[in-house]
Length: 359
Image (cartoon, rainbow, N blue to C red; front, side, top):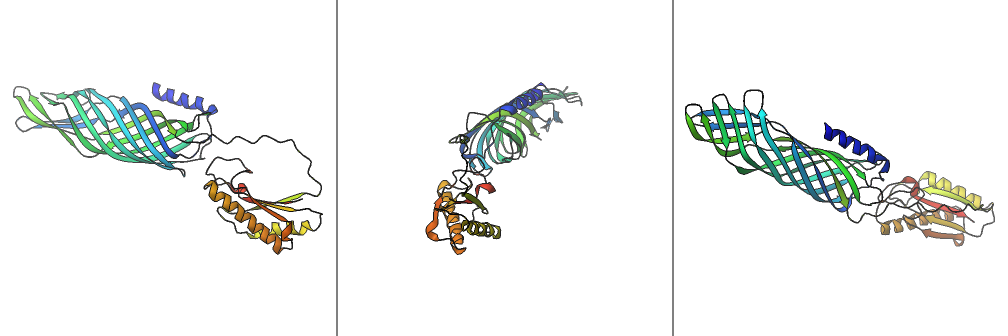
């Protein structure tokens, strides 16, 4: 309960300082530390000469740690290789007259696929994921006893396939591009049984070798940690506010918007171009500027070419509507001079535009 309250308080205190979340792009590393709430594990000790003792072993909360290295695709999807370790003690009675002791360590690699929900919650980036891998389970001094019979397992390590589900959230650290604080919950389960050597002792009948079979290894893991994405660019700095200049009484501008990754004109766009062409005959102009822009999705090189294609399409429509081609100056600015400031790889409709300026 104390750990959960501390985690909640840390998250609330971090919110006012959080930076804007961005999709994970390229190589990153991460790590975390927390607790493993292991469900009671079922054990069955069988000695043909003496009998069987079968019961759930009472477990205690223990520490858990993970380290990971991964790669983000920039669209919310990412994959990572994780190394995991946890430690749990057995102890006490399970309520059926069987008491247990000893401890268990789990360690091994997991391959995870995760998806970040970018922009879903301000300043916080939720994520979900699944993973599969292999865990080695080391049992030390494992023993259990009930009325008239007891069992103990020899110290040993067995392997088992493992799976997990992940849900969590990341909070970017302001002033440190690429660094985020994370908090997540994981359900980790092991597949199949694990059998260790051991012995069973029955009252008045002696001790005999036995097989100790363990299964139902289910873990609820809560960790707090970090991720760091290499090569993350600083958040865009707003352009300084220029001193307002009174517009020329004969200057007019028109905005023509485009669909994502398109340079063809919509019916509405043609109406705006026609209006600009018609109004150009009502003023004494020296030139007409046609400037193309894009949003930040895609590469800068591709966006530069797309902005020029958009400007060309508008200029061609102006000529079609009667504007002399010699009066038109065409420029493409790519993903620079954003109308709405965004981070990289953001599809913003108002940034996909061509501006017609009549001077």
